Image (tube, rainbow over all chains, first blue to last red; front, side, top):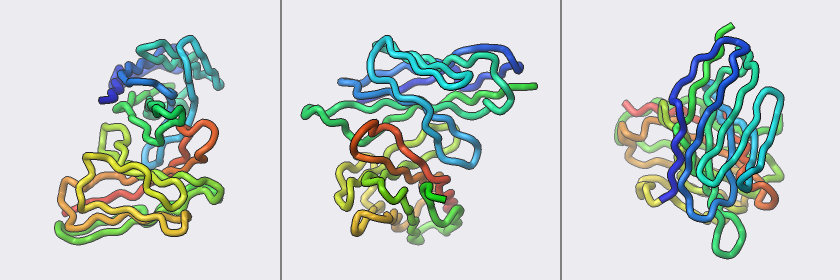
Length: 115
Length: 115
């Protein structure tokens, strides 16, 4: 069964203090790995898609990387507005080469950035 | 606003009652998903549609849950004979079947409380 584990569960940073969030996954036939951000009382918001080991994506202060077993979300010089829950999800490919629709999410990392 | 719309935002019901939620996806999206999220956890997949066809349903989904997407537009999720364990945030998301199918657009959810 597909499994996604995120660590740490919660992370408190001072503004400007860079750090990384980890997402470890077990899935047969990875189609893609996705990072989402979720603010309280809202649905998740898409950030990145990573398809193969070695791939990297960047957006403002966020950078996502992927290996064969895990993904990292690096946050450089975070600001208080980066405070949110960050979710990692995996999607497996189908035998026919098209992707299944289902995403399997991890439990998330709650990030708090203090000014 | 052309995002995913969910109604109602909050629902309080008594155990044993039936409830129905509605989701209006982004108009050009042909895939629609239902997820459930409890506090401190990531979203858990329930089911998804491509147009009007229900393509996958979670094995964990009780037969008290049923979803429809008539005419491939809006969708409803019904829970019959609600139980306290059904209390959760019910999230709807939509996407295109082509391209990065893991890029889901989520609504703000319906928070269900079963008393």
